[in-house]
Picture 1 (cartoon, rainbow, N blue to C red):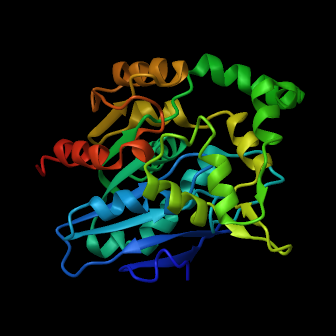
Picture 2 (spheres, rainbow, N blue to C red):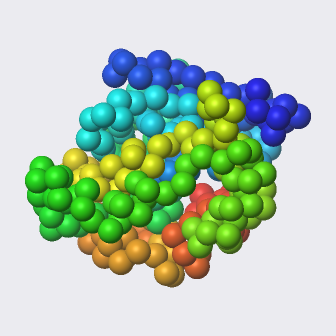
Length: 301
């Protein structure tokens, strides 16, 4: 077991799916829970990265976090193009089984970034799975951008873009966790992470490879491939979404998130918008404030 978890009440779990892959995650179990919650992280991160947020949830709440396919301990076929619909279905199947939705009822779904988009698709296609969902700066790529991404994908031009090259060519191996933490803490993406979040990211978003090095569990190739993918079923899911949905949008988020979220709210009156956070990674930068907002949205404070 990871040393960060040895002194906690959090357990690691793994659930096989009918897609031929396993979904892995973490669970904070409580007796007679007052609420049941499922978290889903964003691209390039891990379920464990959100454990500090889970620690901040009410002690009487039963909380699960899943690793997105190809992240942490969740497996996937990285030689295939990312299929948002298939990933959402695999996660929904895992949540249904692991959280015993048939017998214990629906849960609250909370997803950040790519995890927010997958939570939305899963909720739309499985109306009995969630009681409501809260999406934290979800990736909402407008249809016109999806068409462009599809064209780039089928022609192979996506591999020539600067964004693909920057992610694909990123460093993904270090001598040990200390070196990984020291180097990434200087990077713009991670430098404002809460210290505890950063610690969990280093130890749960990576593993020790056969050479004894610390290596990212989500390979740069897979992360870059997700960034260059197009969102199958996303906007169809937005239109048919039938449960209460709260979307939290950061002040300095990506332009496509801003436009996509506003478009989604216009298409479906079940979607309610909230402004919070300085940037796209606010759940990792402001974990306590993020949980305070979630509890406020759920009318628990």
